Length: 70
Image (cartoon, rainbow, N blue to C red):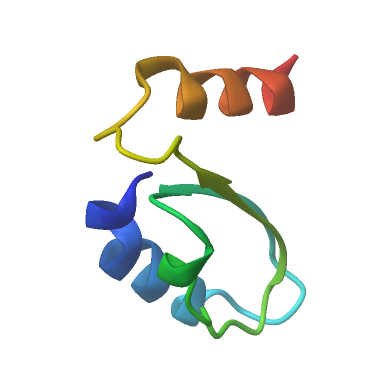
């Protein structure tokens, strides 16, 4: 998800039981938007940073998800 999805992603991660596995990919403007997302789960968290001055790159998140699936 993008930064608008972070609250929902955070709630899901907080609810994960110990040992649950999840891959999380979040698109934000830059590293300053990265936050701590507490969880008991075993997560692979990847932050994607948009190019400066853009409001979103349509394929940035999509391509990252495709890399995980295929």
